[in-house]
Structure formats: C-alpha cells, structure tokens
Amino acid sequence: MNSSFIGKVDKARRYAEEKDRVSITTFRATFQGNHGTYDVSFDDGRWNCQCAFFWRHEACSHTMALQRILDEVLARETQVVEG
Image (cartoon, rainbow, N blue to C red; front, side):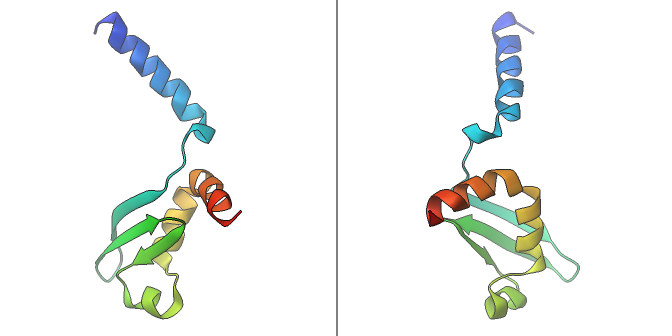
C-alpha cells in the first residue's frame, strides 16, 4: 500500500468520526421486511416506502428502523429543512 493511500485511509477515518461534516439530503435503500422487500427513500426531509402501511400512515417500521440507524446525520438535516 503506498503512502498516499494510507493518508486517505487516515483522513476517511477522521471524517467518519466528524459526523457533522455530512448531511444526507437524498437516500435510497432496499429493505428486507418480514413480508417482502420494499424500496425506501428519504428526499428533502421526507420519507417514502412502498409498503401499504406507509401509504395509510405516512410512517412504517421500515422508515422508522432506518431513522434509528441514521439518526445523527438525518436529525441534523431535518433541523435544517424544518428550521
């Protein structure tokens, strides 16, 4: 491994610890639920999921799980969008 690559790995590690550097504005994922696979997205502060529960309630276990996983970064972005 060359020295410039090692430097990039160290920089990436440092960036990963400084979560305030990142704001997620658009996000897409495939979520494997108990009853099927769903496309879940986050765009401009709003969640969307293909499951029937989401369409009735504008929230579901898939979006809530991803919110918990991405809590720190998404919370910052939601404050910017709402605020």
